Length: 269
Image 1 (cartoon, rainbow, N blue to C red):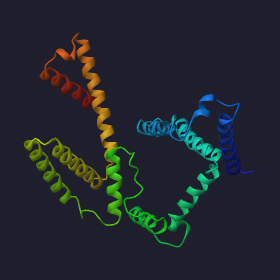
Image 2 (cartoon, one colour):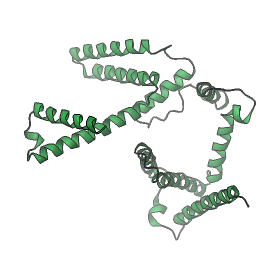
Image 3 (cartoon, one colour):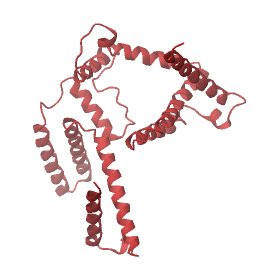
């Protein structure tokens, strides 16, 4: 028996074991907490596990990644078990669905269609959704529950895949200037509703800019948040070493320490 065959058998065995464990946890003699769960009660856990996977990837904690992915996989198996108990679907249906979808959306791999670039694939992918999967709009399929920044990014990508996009980045810069001006006008008018609308337009344009810069805005903002958090804690630590509270410091004093923290970061780089 080849090493590849042994690996495949082990994978299948461990997956079957996971499904069996989940069924036992949900059984009459299983875990009270697991038995109480529903699709609705598990929603937040699914979201949290997905973000923990993302955090492990962002921090390059690859040794932790199998464990985090396992926690996420458990959520899928949990929902499949609930579906089986309700006689709606089971794990086999879940796997069959994604297998069929992958084959359908990759005709250049599993069929005779010719696709040479990732950009072509994105366009064909969206065309497939509209023609073969009954999507009513090119921007269907983006969950409303997504964080607004990444939802905007996904919707813009879908619209761009069918040709609704700027030809290059130059009009986006112009649009950015335009939206800044409109936000300033709204602020001068003092209308809270108009300010919110114009700020939304500005953020939407920034997301558009990120697409042309080939930068995921969610990743960029998360990186900046992490950087700010690290620097802010360093500023707090610096004031603590001086025996002072930031509450009693002037903005000029805090800014001076902030700049010193940034200078030290550059020295380390």
